[in-house]
Length: 220
Length: 226
Ligand SMILES: [Zn+2]
Image (cartoon, rainbow over all chains, first blue to last red; front, side, top):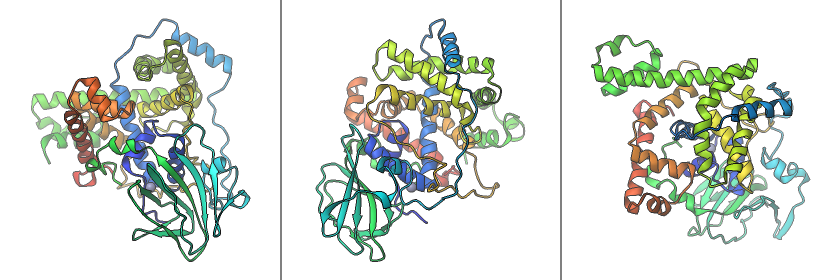
């Protein structure tokens, strides 16, 4: 599997700094699960965080804080021993990687899809207070993705099958990014139904976090 | 390649032994290199402390980590405008998590400050925010692991992180300030401009310069790391 369409740098940085909303974070984390390249960009972004921590002013620490932490550690009795690592027996057998599988409450075969007509189905994913909304989409092979207005940024992550849009193919792991000005109508590939995670109205403000022309400094 | 790149490369390749190329450098450049060496030594020390906590539940090592990171993390948590009680609470939770999760720290992948930053960030989100921050799971059967490249060409994450921290050190104080506000507080440019009493154009150009510098220093064409 070769991923061609990745997460933009500003979203990687916003995810690393912990400022990204839950729905968009879900899509970013699910892509990361499939994409070593973006995980490397994330590690680098997190090391910016580490460097900035080193440079933080040194605030005064009250006497007894360390002792309070030691007694807390003793009371919780959690030892610093590693948890057993689960087997990887079923590697590759899930369509939905974590953390998406937990959010969807299972893999694709057990999902309770809702019909949108024309064979297209969807499943809203609960991402709490997040303003952006996440949902899974099921588009039959060769069908058009239904019209769906969005005010902010729209991100679509392919999990099965493929779709074609704006002159490019998107396959498992690929992310398409479209802002409100893009009028597009993706079409599912002919080989099999396309299943994707769509996050609509992700905050556009991250577009201004890092000027476009400073990209792609994380190497994507 | 300019002189400072040579120093950097030399100090990366040879650790702290300052021989060869370094011996030919002027006094001022030597001092600069020593500063970097000292920073680097401190990074190593903190990593060693974390490993000691993981392997031996070493309280001395944990205390040293606390002395170094607690004052800095307190400043970090205070950025989020919570009251002192909640800030102290998240401090305690963060250090308790550092103790219990120390075995997850891999010194070949991350510096101590980066790993501790991610622990602090996660604790802050749990404590201060209503939304969660979903994370990938490397033990998930669907997880796609990286192709481990041949040792010769692969630059370790440690080295990349050190390289980054050197690039960060080269930023001006003003550039670092806007970078900090953009990264830690996700302030839009307008808010940063208001807060620093600067025209928005100045803020934008400082952020652009800061990121531009990091990008240039870390890009493959600059002999970089990605
Ligand atoms: Zn990617």
